[in-house]
Image 1 (cartoon, helix red, strand yellow):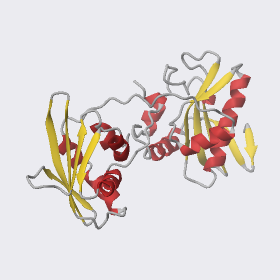
Image 2 (cartoon, helix red, strand yellow):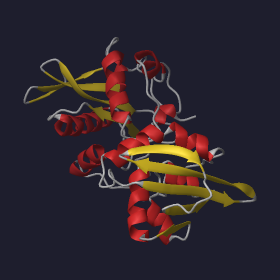
Image 3 (spheres, helix red, strand yellow):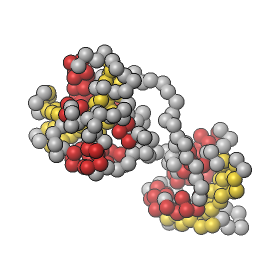
Length: 284
């Protein structure tokens, strides 16, 4: 064991660890838009050989470090000590913790451990490339003295080609969000429509009742909330990258309703902001 702190130990990856590490990653990833769930085989497959997206655990098991207490896995980190375009540095590209009371302690310990190993390998700096909206990683990095590099939001390119089908596929999740909010007893129709760039208008109705959401074709009657968003703003709204209020202030979303503020709050419940994270190992 290379490190021990109040019975917290950190060791290198061993064959067979991928089963529990894949489970921790997949649970961690559910909080973000972007990461693909992994199996033990697919998680390990990402790190079989050194590539521009990650290190090789076969060649260098120390690239994967696991924090444990009393034999229970608390967290793990993947650090690439030979990242492309960073010859003098090392890169922490995964830092995932199980939801335990020791999660913050384990995350901080893994960062310190990666720094120590980077120094031993002659690296002059270490960088952390994780989701900017990951509160635990951000707190651990801040506690270790890291600064946040200002950069524009992650590249996000998408278009919605079939609005009714898209909304039908997520209707269950929309209902869950409404059912757990102040609008659980709200009844009415929210019409979502989009047009722009020479495309035909897409439109459909979300019928809310008793915390449930049903998707129907746009009716002829006047809806309780009429939300129109351009085709470029539509995926940002539906996929949780920008909130309705922000799009409204940017004049990229128009809302017709008896109470526009309440309508915007309802739209932000339906299409809540979801943190985005694309793990380096899952890059193209």
